[in-house]
Length: 488
Image (cartoon, rainbow, N blue to C red):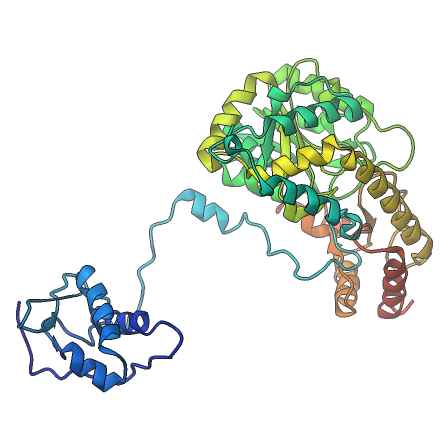
């Protein structure tokens, strides 16, 4: 080792703060100086007693810091011969003028244009999209069940579990779907996920080859489209009308064998896929030997008439993959959803789940299973449906009868949101800008269209409002605020 004892040891800039681990601070300060070259290789460090005196700390503190540097190879020396900065083959430069761009994969490049925006911060306000009535969730009951589970959990549930999820919860979900949706299914077909987005992403990973065309509703749920695009799909937007997705247009797509739909309550327009269209869609899947991903994200919320049977309940060819979530009944932060898979796909999806996250978190699954088994879930569903209906009615009653450039409110028979057509994108932006300035949340309908859509730009304009997030009094207050902001 070349020793340059003539090089002075500079203590300037080393500031140690009592109560924050002096040895650790000294180790980090010396390590940083060695890496950036301020302490050159071969520099002789002061003896531990001398360094302690210079810094005003104990010798034991200095010794612990130096021992860590010895252990990691930053300093070297022999007893009686002093301590020196080691020869390092790589050193971080003090200043970097430019950083060469890292090589990027095609997936990283796709994320530049296919990613989710950061969620809105803070508690829900009128008229936030995609959230239910948090204020009605029985948190005390949930906390009691959770405490009971973690007070003395079974050792059998604390190791690695089934990647498909907790069997008790899967059995209860299957029973719930049989009773409430009319589905013919078994627990072996249920796969627990961290919400519907992960469920959709799993479908994208396993059912798509790069370049495959995938049919999505246009306008539609862009987060699903992003998942398919990042998997390499070519997104094919299919137009909507008053009966939902135009299945005739879907049938004209070449080589398309996967369609993503929200038939119960189309996101974001709110239309329901008619029975004739449902049957035609199932016939398409049979003809092309394809798959349909049915996202039933808010299917529990139906306010009039008898809900149409899900596609999965009409499917006698096992071509429908059913996506469900607890996020619209409890709260999105729960991160709990599920897939109901055709038997031919169940094992493969579980294997892929195991590679991605091994299995879902056990505590939340166990508590939800008990929540359902004890009857709390069914009571909560009824309460949430009643509250959403009441909040919908309040909005419909309070909403201005005439807004320049806006269509009247549509009939709202399902779901947690509605959309209102606007005459132009310019008017859409004007209304939303004024609403946001007044502290009212709403989304532009034009944001839900695929880039390059054939539909004229002004025909894409509209307002998308959630009505379930806040109580009735806040809805009335928010509408009054909008009247002032829009000068009605």
